[in-house]
Image (cartoon, rainbow, N blue to C red; front, top):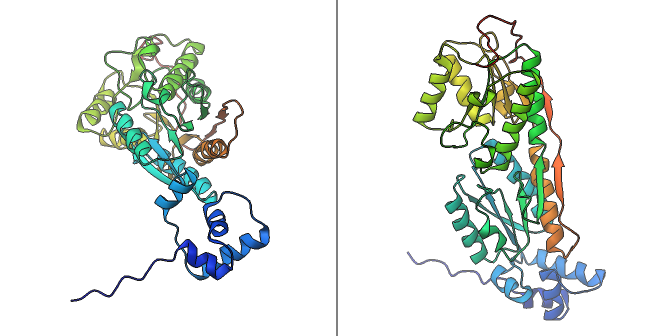
Length: 360
């Protein structure tokens, strides 16, 4: 069957003719550069709307040197934390007429490098990155366009950054558990680390993981809990081996009486594993997690969470980047947003028992 002829696209010349202005004037209005009067701008925009004009992004980038897009590289798009942060970025970008191109690193440094290469090849005007590692950042130093960091700081990289108060948040949450009488407290994270932690925070390549662990350890020291480093458990991501790690942790005779989870994905896996082991929250195990994911408020019992302003994180980092794109040359900012703890019903008191040794 013969296809109908493709309708011709509306051009800048068509808009200029409709608005009764020169093609150059119409191009300035539609491209968002140069100066024109408010009356002329209104006439051109009205003509563009009437003709259903759709800009040719390639042609516009050749004229203005801008693609009208930014690239965003996050660690795990399946994690609700990053999904909500990207929503904040997208909402701000849309209001500025900027498109967002999203890439997922899967928390792998080589995938991050590849994603950045692809985005730069697409001539994005700026980048927002959640760095997978803090020890391998040469590729970030080489980025020529404006760069902003989301959620994870790199103090040695002088760029705009937005994070939350990770160390203080973990300190306050762990303190809540120690004040409830818990001595065997575990910190569980999906981050990977070969061997035991044993105080080797310099080997942790992700700033958020490092800061939260330091906050956890500080609260344990405050409570006189010795050997807390042995209760930090890495590699609790979504895999059969990770699930087996959780099962072993919960079935051990000296299992923790309380757990602080690094994020809501890890916490959900923990919640399932606790049920599978025939244990209950909070009578057997108390649980607190970072991030107020939707599921945490509808379980039985609902879970106490460290509520991070995730949408505001994305919104703030996008605003900083767009400010750079508009020519702002003030020194880079590092914005630290506060967190709050939402107390629900997953933390129970733990009377001191003979089996609760401070060094276990």
